[in-house]
Amino acid sequence: MQNKGAEADKIDRYDIVVLIAVFLGWAVSATDITLNGFLLGQITKAFHISTALFGFIGLAFGVGDGLGGFIFGRINDTSWGRKLTFLITLLGVLVFTVLSGLSVNFPMFVATRLGAGIFSGAEMTGGWVLLAEQIPSYRRSWFISISQGGVAVGYFFADLFSSTFAAPTSLGWRWGFIANGIIGTGFYALRFALRESPAWSHIKAFKLEGKAAGATVSQGVREIFKSPYGKITALSFVGLAAAFFGTAFHDYYYADWYEIGGIDRTPLPSLVYFLVFVGFVLGHFAANMTEGWYMDHFGTRRAVLFTSIAVVMMVVFWRVPVDISYALDFVILFLVGYGVQTIWGFAPAYMPQVYPTRIRHSGEGFLWALTYGGFYSLAAYLGGVWIALNEWYLVFIVSGVAFAIYVAFMASTAIELKGKDLDFLEKFGAAGGE
Picture 1 (tube, rainbow, N blue to C red):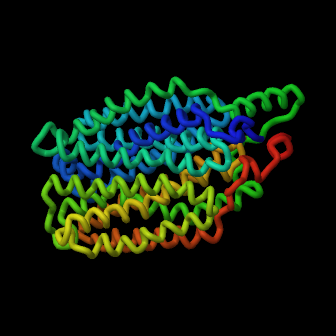
Picture 2 (picture 1 turned 90 degrees about the horizontal axis):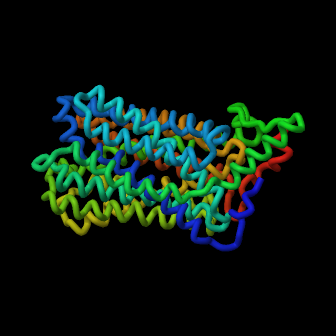
Picture 3 (picture 1 turned 90 degrees about the vertical axis):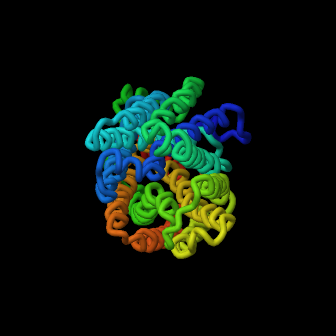
């Protein structure tokens, strides 16, 4: 089934509104996630925990994120629809990011990270579905990729907050989370300008027509495993599990590597630390501005190859001392950010387009729960343990290997999406109705 409006020739003003809404929502979620890495030292001191126990924060968030993507995916496809789901998800992120800042002990903080993860997973995957059903095929991957550029805003806010009023000598780490909630509340207002996705409206109408005729629309979880989607899910699982396993270290521990002074343990002055991480921010933004464009113009499998940059940069990031040149630090961080973030241009654009409208968020959410919820969570926990043992080399070696597996597997097995309409793998009326 096709959203007629989404297949129009030109991008209109409303398409831009949807893009901005998804972009800003991800900016709030990304700030909430990355604050933990920038404030690792303060959080461990505040709750009197080891770095190994800090890993439970990432574990709780990742598990919640996976669960949220799947649970809200089912609700989105079968009950609430795209708009209501998207209104609820960011609201949940805002509530739990503020509660994180108000936590009185470590168990409460972990619980708030679980809650934030549930709504963040729903927020991210729901935004991708909304854009996939709104944007024309020749720009679809690009727009979804751009929307993930909100992570650059998240890294910038986390870097800024942790260097100013959330610094140890200022108001404290709690204000970083509270400030994110305040800013996110302003971003939330744009959501009221969104309309229901015509694609979901068509599902609803089709279900009503089918019910009257004694037929049904198949939306059960088992549909994810039927041909051809079962094979797609299995193949995607391998590549994306490796990708998300590697990106967990990036989200939680890369900033701490520079904070302790890198391989020579020579920390940078606080202002320099802030400025060189602007390179990291810009690298993320550049990746999201280009990866989806590569998918639309060069093809899905070729676009994956750009993540090879991350494989090389893991060695450079690990082995090059941070005090050689501040300009070099900026360039290294830019390339690390760019290479890793191409994954977050590709995966969000890929997942919602390979499942049909009737199970788009359910299929995407199930794959998300398996890969991000399982492997990202595991890596976030292991990273804390390895760092507590001062085994930093494992972080970089395992990251590089994970990224290499992702590139090799997805470059050889990914479904080609270039120029394809939604639901190109099935005829909705024939495959969706019984």
